[in-house]
Amino acid sequence: SQNMRRFNNKPKITIISPSKNTGKYLRDTIESIKVQTYPDWEHIIVDAVSTDETLSVAKEYRHLRVVSEKDIGFYDALKKGTEMARGEYIMICCISDGYLDKDWFKKCVEVLDNDREVALVWGFPQRMSEDGKLLDISYPQFHKVLPPQKENFFYYWLATFFWFPESNFCVRKEVFERCFSRNDFTQLDGNKFLSFSYVFNTRGYVPYFINSVASYGRIHGDSGSVREA
Image 1: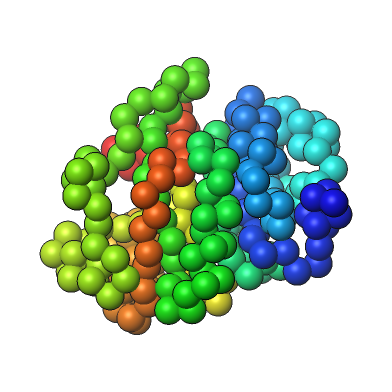
Image 2 (image 1 turned 90 degrees about the vertical axis):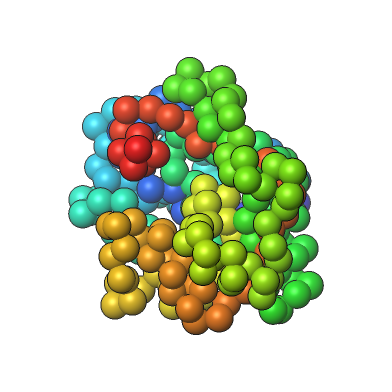
């Protein structure tokens, strides 16, 4: 059954969700993962000792793996989640964000399983208002002309320094660990995903774009997108 596969010791995908006091969005995030048509995944919530309803809501979902302890921020939580991960592929989904394409996991696995050359797949994110209204789809430069694929993406990256959307990319675990190592950070603009893309591209890893509006990123007071802006 799907439930039994989700407790598999070696799931195909691990979704890591850092959280801190975003409990009011937690059900939406969890449900957007539960409705995925691909069943072989585990979901880890790495919580920074939330004082809101986060942990009480999380207890309602028996399939979750939850750790709640003090950390030193988002990237520390992400590193902790990666060390816990049993999946072959890693995905990141902050609490308040989620997935729009119910077949997204299936599409990612199909590419990564069938093409060893590809290290990471990604798609379009869409912004969402705090109250749940869908807004603009990101990356208008790709709405009519899709991004270059595989090795050809390297030249686009050299020209633009574009970084992959952490809200929906699916990456081989060993590649994520190599490219997200603290020792490798160039600390470009203080954005570790910009640094991740730098290491990924300069080490010669190959990405693949799937033409799908894969995920949503909710805009709220404590969201990374607001702080970045």
